[in-house]
Length: 311
Image: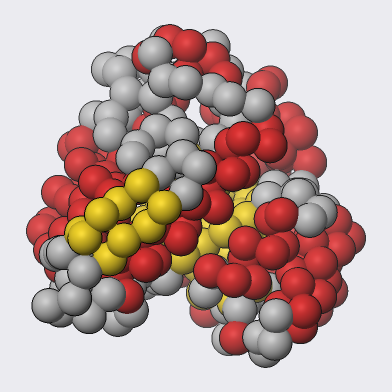
């Protein structure tokens, strides 16, 4: 079972905070450091010192870490044009020596779009945009050196793009797709993703999502076993009940729903819950959502007391 850390910098963080978390995660043996791609605190909080750009953050971390995987959970397709986004992600992949993973979704948080003047179309159009972005980005990455990439869609048109820079990984950074959609999401995962993430939900719902993706894979002739199954969980892990109780309020009442399906409890309780998740859903990778990015002790506790019991 691989454990990765995912953070929510829009709730309040600067680069030094994120660097401390990434370096702690790397030295403690976690497989990856990920961050959200948001420009506004999701609970209405102050979010000081202010929003930070996900890919600028990861570019810096690419040069300040050496082993840990880096990525977004997830980049919103509404935020950036696909051509420049493909260039940025490929460049960060090269800067990291091939350690980048590209989580991407349709976008959902309307308030941050209004706040920063980003168009926010309806759900169907957002999925159209996401589909074309995946076609463009993966197409650019897969274009051999010296060849050109062109694309004509409803939302984007590219003419004779040189498809540079080439990412360090071939044919490109692994794509991560998640979500609860019943039709288009499974299809996009089957066609483009290396990993499908069932985030912040119950084992029963996660299994239903995985099965829909399996069906979509079979419909296009892809082996479902080629797709990594992962899930994301909010964490409040302690050495005893008092420490667990102390960590829960740090998330605030807005996150009670996610905590209901999170990894909340003592070390023994969390190890048991992870085991039941693995047995019932087949997940092999977990993203641990750390809201209090100053709580490095929790990361070290999980690494020293939980991680060794997951082999």
